[in-house]
View 1 (cartoon, rainbow, N blue to C red):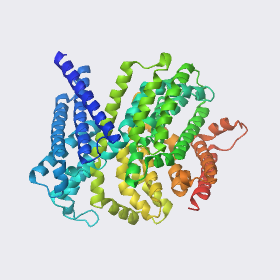
View 2 (spheres, rainbow, N blue to C red):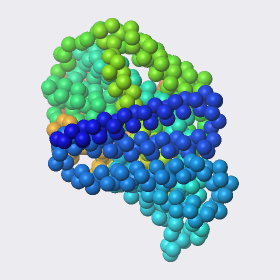
View 3 (cartoon, helix red, strand yellow):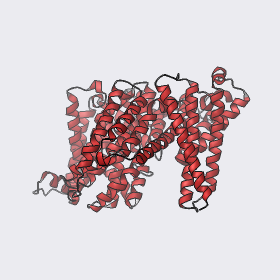
View 4 (tube, rainbow, N blue to C red):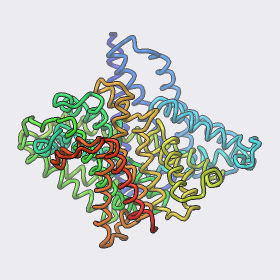
Length: 619
């Protein structure tokens, strides 16, 4: 391999880290009030993310080329990366240095402004294609085309008024509070340092600690090898907030452990995919979509995180029950791997204290980014007292670098989906879609909710959770509100099934990643994931009918009773799925001679009737 490729990679890496450090410093200064949060500040943020996205794309391709100089379409993708970098950076620089004038002119821009806006739009789309794939880029591009030319559609439901080019560009690329800038404040002020905090936790040993804690419970119950995956992936995903990346991160350790201890490859992959998905429902990050819920409803983020707590615990409980019954049916033994108590004793204080710092600051209504910054400081300081588990300087630097990578990718995602949301709002496409759904679906609230569930799962297929949530929320939430359901519970209903879309056929990106790691076929892995999660499909229906299961201020004496009832119903459904053997082993009753099919039907009927009378009969 020619030496210049290695030198180029070093230069690109240096520029990426340097830009990231400068951008982080700029955001920190703004968070503490030394720079006024303004269109100039947020346009600078977008410029920094654009530069880092382009450099990251080049770095990734150079890494691939250095490992295999016959990598497919290397030069073509390099051209896409360079073109996207140049176009997006050119447009972002123009907007940054003309931001005050553009604010005054909007939407009556000069022709040169429109040209640079189109250049910026093309560059963002190319960078999105590079990092997030064809599907998402195509959806965003179609939304932009619809905004420009939707008035030509000869259908009263989908047409919109004829907008002037300057008006459209104001809402797509030139208005510094719309379009690509619509959610920029969320990325800069809320998630930036919280995501870096997640990477720091991984570097100080949080993953190792979580896996060891899982072994403790795994040594006490049948099928115990699954519990490190459930607990470890759940804890790590609760701070990482991304299902697919969490599958890749934790699945390398948990899937081989499960296969070694008796789980089939497809079930091992399914358990890891489901556990990693569960983390997106767990506070504090909620798969990034939690911040979007707060932004769309204009409520404090901590309120969203608090409301997600009980549903997340119900989800994890349901998965524990399903895995336990499957393990008993298959007679999978307890876990026998050695438990490293030292790692837990040394690492747990760092994790718990830094996590508590973040949580307390969120409860005190500090910015999530400020909370994340303080969490980073606490984690790094306490990690110095971890003895032989103390992270090296190289590992800490690597974690900070990975944090910059994570925040770059997710910030680019937030920037890119802005025009998608803006198009649906400004053209009122979301409201009209809600009207269509009301006309098409049957006039029964429960059936309409089931229809909304399927629509959410279909619209979210193959998309990152935040995008799946935005797309479906703008289309489905107005429809749910027309049915009389509260705004927050409607958003949570959609968010829950947007998370589920990473597990459901035919695409199921979370399952696909897990199946590759497990060495299993995709379809059996997806079917096993569905079996594990069927009991927890009831949770969003329960929440939307019983707000006391979500909103903290609505908790009453009935809340623990409803929680317990839903756990029992989940256990009955799981027992019906995994058959009489699983339940017989669980309750140690060996005298049952009932037909398996009748047993399952009776359990399903009992579950449905109980759920109806406890949760659905009275709203």
